[in-house]
Image (cartoon, rainbow, N blue to C red):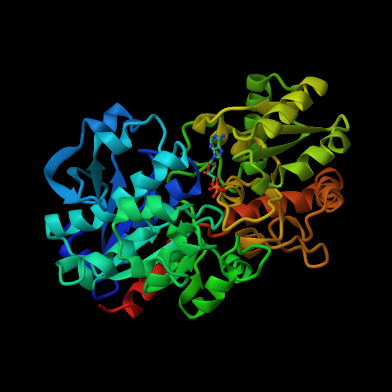
Length: 498
Ligand code: ADP
């Protein structure tokens, strides 16, 4: 048993106990490029409180910080057949137990020695074919057979396929599988020959119901969706949206076909890690009682650190994001000149496509003192911006769940979001008649609707501060933890009795 829960505490938990193997390509704090890394970290912890025994299986990337590498303990190794020509590969297991969760890192220098988890598809396709099969082989090797194998995104999507095609009759063959879609845009599509070679899966699986994509390519995510016992995605609205052509990324018909096993469970955030009362990275800590005063102190500290005009009466609008077309940055680019009115500042933190990096740099140059573009990945700066901003932009074209609006609310920063995916499910629009809601929203993907939403926010901020401050407190009090979602995942695990 991997958790350190006492007998009495465990007896008080929901029964019976369920064992779950999480399989995915990233996990904070070892390696994180986006929301998937947060979920792989926080959800297992929340599941432990739901009487689940959780093991997380990850690649042992070279880029995992040395302080974690040093703590890993060798648990064994073996050779695994992988390719169509019979080539086999080394699978090492390095284990790290932390906070009740067992992390098993799959070790192989040939696949995981790059500086980044993802490089390009030429390398990533073989890497994750290997990883998906090795994860199952590791569970058998360790003789740790879970009730549920919970796979995440395309990098682990072949797990249910390998399980059905090659692991039947082995211990892990009887487990139920769940595939969670964190972002449907990324599917692991590559030509048939390459995927046939690297998986050695039977020819029968390269048909249209499983791997086949337009008769020349194979689609790893599509195959996983076919074979998983259940499919989940990270909000109810996104679960509906992906069954339509606009959001379906070419898989809408496939998802409609499998819709009976598709469910949306919204993400949460780790409220211990993200806590303005204890966050050591902030200039001033705060709770609901002193948020208004202390957020001003954080704002001044941020303005000073970033070279913005130092004035806590200005409204600071934050944006922390991968800089890609998914995130609605075309709309942001279109409205920045209209936002800068002498009383408003914009702070951007992100990296990504050159077109957005350059445009934000350009705006900083044009509006010195009012716009600051931090083109970098920096956790510390992220914490400072969440705390210091008054409002926070998430105008995404599509957003499976979105974590930044949840973190913003936790820090009393009012989100301005497009009504799509998890943004729609987590941000209740401000209702001026009833004085309810958590943020400002708009529906269609139009720059002038975003501008309208920002202007509504500005109007309340500058002319109805009392109501604004009440919304700040409502946001901080909103439950954005994993608690409710972990209960839903547990229910799902219970439905999938082996
Ligand atoms: P996605 O997974 O699509 O990138 P999410 O909103 O689900 O978006 O998760 C983004 C996570 O990455 C959040 O925790 C956010 O704070 C963090 N993040 C994004 N860009 C940066 C950055 N440049 N520096 C620090 N953290 C970032």
